[in-house]
View 1 (cartoon, rainbow, N blue to C red):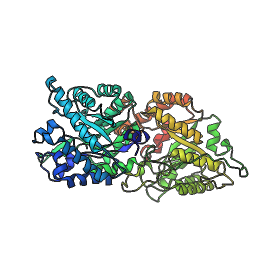
View 2 (view 1 turned 120 degrees about the vertical axis):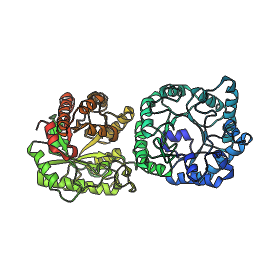
View 3 (view 1 turned 60 degrees about the vertical axis):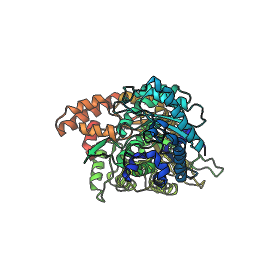
View 4 (view 1 turned 120 degrees about the horizontal axis):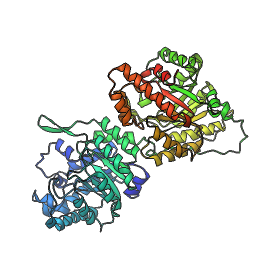
Length: 608
C-alpha cells in the first residue's frame, strides 16, 4: 500500500468510529481499563474492528487511547505499556487484512481539567515517546495524536514522535464555539500545526457534534494545505435515565460527513457515540461522491471514420439560438410529479409558455427522491405545453451504457437541451439502502455527450447522424473551496459544456467573484439560479440543508421579521427581484425555481 498521507491526498478516506462507546455498550464497566482489553479480551476488540471494516472503514485506530505509562498507572499497569500497545496493533491487523490502514491512537497523558506542570514535562514527553515506540515497533501505518485540548501537551507529543519515521496526524478537540477547554481558538492550533514540519495531517475530533465540527472546519481549513481529518461525536450526549446517550442518527451524521468532504476534508470518521451503523451509512454515501469514486475515463475521441454533419450550436434548439445570440433567457424549474397524474405540472408549464418563459428546467431525482421520469415529463411538456425543456440528467441511477441509450432516445424524441449533473447520493434521499451507480461524474458524461454530438459513442462506435444536444453544466458560486470548484468548472468546459446554470444565488458578491474567475476560463453564457424564498424557515433550510447554497445573514434578518405566510412570500419575491436586478448586467439569463411548486412566485420574480 502507498503511505497513508499520499492515499489521503489521492482520495478522501473513511476512518472508523468510537471504540470506548462500543466497548461500554458490550457490557464492559467504565471502571475497567479499556486498553487492557487488548490482552484480556482480544476477541471483543477484534470483533469491533471487524465491524468497522465491514461497515466500510478504510482506516482503523488501535484501542490505545489511554495506553501510556501515566494513564495505565491508575490501573497498576504502568509496566505493561509495550505489551498492551503491541497487542492492540495485532487486534487491529487481524481485522484489517492487507487493504486497511492501521494507525496508532495516542491520547493525552493528563486530564482535560489538569494544567501541565513544568515539573512533569519530561515525564509526559517520555510517556508519549514510549507508547509511540511500541506502536511503531508493532507495525502501525501511522500515528494519530487525538483529542488534545492543550497546545503545550500536544507539542510534547509531537516532539516525542520526531524520531519515528511514520505519518503523523495531530488532532485537537474544541467545543461549539471553536475554542478548547482552556480557551485556545481552533485557528491558533491550526496555525501552529501548519508550521510544524513533523505533522503531516491535521485532525478535528471529539468535543462537539457534526454541526459544531463543520463550523470549526469552515474557519480553519483554508489556513493550511495539509490534509484535514474530521471525526466528530455523534451529536452531544443527553442524560436518559441516568445514562449519557448520543442520539444523533446515522443519516444526520452522514449529511455532515458529506459536507466535510465538500469543504475539502481528506478523511472522515467518528468519535464518541458513533458506531458501525454511522460509519456504514457515511461510507456508502461518500464513496459515491465526485472526487472519491474512481470513474470510468471518458476521452475525447478522434476518429478516422467518415466525417459526420455536426449540428451548429445555434441550430440545436430555440433556447440555444436565443442564449447564444446574447439575448436574456428565462427558465422556470418545475419538479416532475410524485404520481402518474401529469395534469398539474403540465398546466404550470402551459402558464409559463403563455407568459413568455423560454424553457422549463426539469430536475432528475432531486434529493435522491422518486418521481415520474424527468425524460417522460420533458417529452410531455414539449408535446402538450409547447415549451422547450432543459432536461437534467444525473449520473446516479444508470450505468454508462444505459445513459447513452437514454440520451439517444431523448434526442430522437425531441429533447435537445441538457443540464448534466453528478447527482445526490441515494443515502441523502428516501431510499438509504439503494445503491448509486456513478460510472462517471458530470465531467465524464459531458464528454460522452460531446462525443455523441461529434458522431461517436464511448465505445468508439459511430453515431450517424450525430446528436445535437445543447449541453449545460452546473456551478456553485458559493463553494468554500473555490479553487476546487474552478478546476472542476474548467474540466467541464474542456469536456464540451456550452452553458452554465448556477445554484440559487443569494449572495450577489459571491456570484460576481465567481464570474470574474470564470471569465479567465471561458466566455460561455451563464444563467443564474434564483430562488424566491417563502419564509424565514425556508431560508434557514436552504442555508443549512441544501449543499452549495448560502443565504446571507442580511436576508435571514429581513425574513425573520415577517409574521405571516403571505408576507413571507411577498418578501421572498421582493428579494428575488432585487437579486435579478443586481446581477442582470453580468449574466445571460435567469433560472427561477418554483418553491413548493408555486409557479406564480417564480413568474412574479420575473415580473410576469
